[in-house]
Length: 270
Image 1 (cartoon, rainbow, N blue to C red):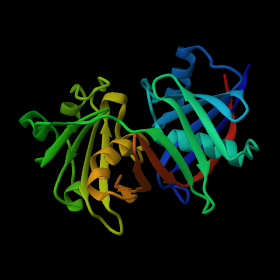
Image 2 (cartoon, rainbow, N blue to C red; image 1 turned 45 degrees about the vertical axis):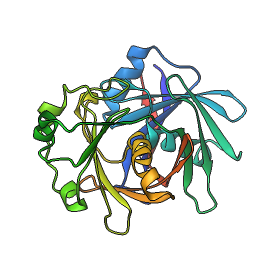
Image 3 (cartoon, rainbow, N blue to C red; image 1 turned 135 degrees about the vertical axis):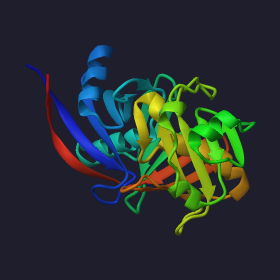
Image 4 (tube, rainbow, N blue to C red; image 1 turned 180 degrees about the vertical axis):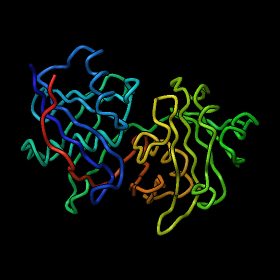
């Protein structure tokens, strides 16, 4: 019998039951892919992150949903940094995470207690809004972009709150540079004390709706950063939870800022 350390974190949250859940499992080395996927399915939260120490201040990082491995996950990166800073005794200035498809990512802890992640900014391109997408989202976007995911702009936060897309129609659609299937973000300017309100649906990755999505907010930065020309505050309006994410487009990088709290600490038994 093998036991593995296990942490469940609410990321982009100032208290339990906010933000997005991520499981973080520090390992001596990565287990076989089928085992990593099976553990993620057993955990059954949006993402399980696996971290392996590589050297001074550097860890290898991989992320799995209950169904697939993904190339980038912001909230589980935030959760991984929280585990290292808060539970595993890391006291350096900056954590570096090496990933296969997203390169080296950086996380620092700010004086106010938030974490700041430094990610590559995604390339995006404006695309036409098709009747197929409007039917699946059950809203008529004003503009749309292809990037890592499909991004759609609507007119008001109220439209965001009222969204009830047809997930069955969204799931098989492949739109975006990375070939992500069934991953759609919808955003609007404004909101209650924020600059941008959005929601993110990923039935193609086994997640009907994600509560807080860092990788989507990298795309939000690419869309809204040139318009706002400053750092801005976002709210991901998942019903019943919600998450506040600070966003800044800095050249070819994106800075995401947020808090995290530990809700479970224990051991996973194989």
